[in-house]
Length: 173
Image (cartoon, rainbow, N blue to C red; front, side):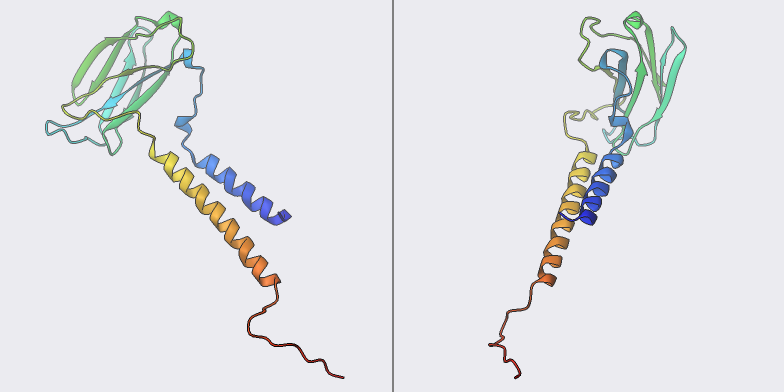
């Protein structure tokens, strides 16, 4: 591989890694991270985009306001410790509120601590589906690799002499 093409490959890889959303990268260990997530839908079961959601640990007076995406999904991550087990949790959407408790197994230090809170009816989605950005990233990587291979094939073809339809060459004496 030539020096210039190595740089192109490196830059493509770096761009793809930087392109992945930062929210997918955890900022705390699993035993310090508590995620509240869910869906907001209307009475017809259709997703409600851009709905403001308030999630608040009322014991420590810390909260977040997040908006639902185009599919009615929201997610907020808190930095909580084992001492926060049982803290009162308030989740509000469109004037409807839920009073819950922070619940998790304090002995489990590896499993993601999360709580799903949905608003509305019929908007349950399969959360185990691979996020779209993974497919976009793989597609981008495929395009980058195909581009590099295509570039190498073109360069190789330009270096080879054209052998089609030429007879023996005649030398001048």
